[in-house]
Length: 290
Length: 243
Image: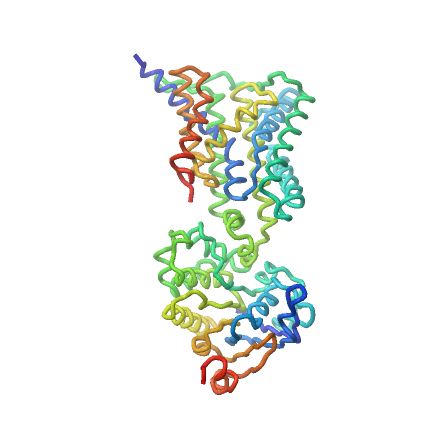
């Protein structure tokens, strides 16, 4: 007999987790869906964001969210530099698809191995006063270590949505992969537009990483576990759709949470791949794909 | 609208070893509609591309004269032309198919100088092309060819252009739609005092709106004159009217 309390708690935890998944997946949805950049290294930048939060917390006692916000511009610059290297080496020569994939695979390994060499294989975590506490609404308990990532993740999604839908550069980002030449006829420089967009995509990883290490301990190879998940979210939501990413992330969060509660946590990783396969089979364009 | 004039002198241009334009000189004065006539492969589009900075001429001058100031256009990128007030409605329309009509129009207003005119320009577009208002939430790629051409012109108008370049607006459109698009360009020009340079191979439609015309044959200006002279000219009769 399934208890109602258990179900409600699993649903609530799943929704909170979903908000966090949105934060992790936004960057990949933007890069793949809007920029045609096959950045499979995105999850490793999230891990990098986690280590930034860890260092600032261990050394100076910074709150992880504060670190995430402070490192957002740093990651933005990192993204712009990375895009310029990618552009000069591959995109300009029209060799982006397969070689680009190899390039980002290489970036993934370099960052991961660098983290391994610097910090070892130990799990790292952050400390903040509110982590470990929770609020209760009726029978449902909401842990702050999930509630804070949820709120920040939803806010990040909202900010990115606003940028893409309401600003001139945001609209140019939506157009650049469709017809870069036509964009020049509108007075926008496609290279600059893509630099900004890729910078922002990587910048989201700074905050997402801070959220990740708040939810649980982090080690350098953890990004592998997230690759399947972020792809499931991005594909299900419709590559390039920000609102779709949020809805898909919430769905996946709930699906994982219910599976973990009623079938055991070891099954929850399988859920994302099942969702990914199902989405590809039934609706490859995703829920909100254009 | 700023008083702008386009001056081309002895422009020579081509692609690699193939020379397409052999010393072309034309003027487009403020408030004028000038049509560039010629059949396929004579260099109309290349000339438009030279003005827009898409093809770089090997020789000659292309300049924008604005408020007594002369701005050399050769060597500038297409995006710079937009900021100078020269906007192109490209051949084949080049809309953003997966964006809505409204999003396409808003991208037309990317030019910094046009952003404060957005509300005014949107009204202008919807007034000129009422179908765009009713389809504003529809994806551009799902519209008919004629509607797409209207959107392409509307999108160009969103940049508050001082000079509007239109490359082959009639290609791929049914005759009735060609007539409608041409008539709308005339209305826009009369009401908003636009300066227009249009490349077109449909002679009968083009002369309906032109003040002046140039006939371009094998990369050279074979004839220039006022519209009424054009229809009388032997060359035109031979090439276009089949007389």
